Length: 280
Image (cartoon, rainbow, N blue to C red; front, top):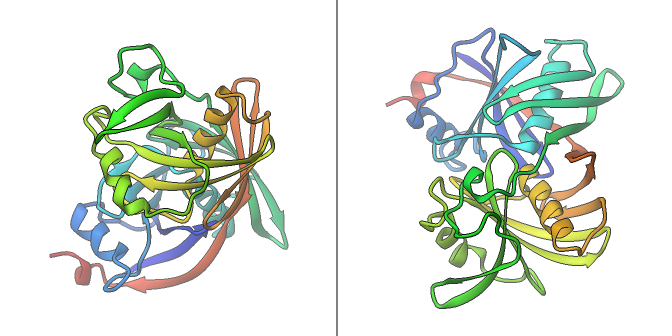
């Protein structure tokens, strides 16, 4: 039997397991089964809390298709809430090891529970070879790219995972028709997360996101950071921006070369499963 906690950060929901005190399966079959919204618990994927040899904790995150992700900003905020609320730590300043590198977080606590978290998401990467993105210039900033006979002006950014951002006059369209085209495009050898952004003013934008391995999600923390920096590179926003996603809003700040993300984290429910029911 495995104890789990279902958590969400502005609608980006994951199933959390304490992997320090439990042995958690991390295979594709298990992850896809528990993430299924009809026959499983239902989520955008799975996140496991582990010990770190260097830092406070180690985070491993998996998409709902079973693939392992590099990082998830919304997932990381909930990760921090999990370790504090479950008394795995009493610290309100945490250093978390992720597949994308070290992430530093500050916890806002009320009544002995974490209400919100600010995360240093690190330095945005725009060198295409490091994203990775197969493009004939060093960077891709508002570059016209022909895809399926249509021209898109794309800005590529990595926040530890690859993102491609484009501007739109409005966001009322069927994202499922176009999201997979970008996700699997050969220009992005590790596939890509895709964001469409509508600029309200220099301190406020709206976005939708198609996440590799998960499809459209209610929110994406790294995506919101990539959107903010893409807007900054294209001179349509300032250093502090409110980013509205389908699930809610995040405050994103660019300071001293780093992106900082602040937002809520919430526990939805907790439960126990028999892992044998989810392993074929």
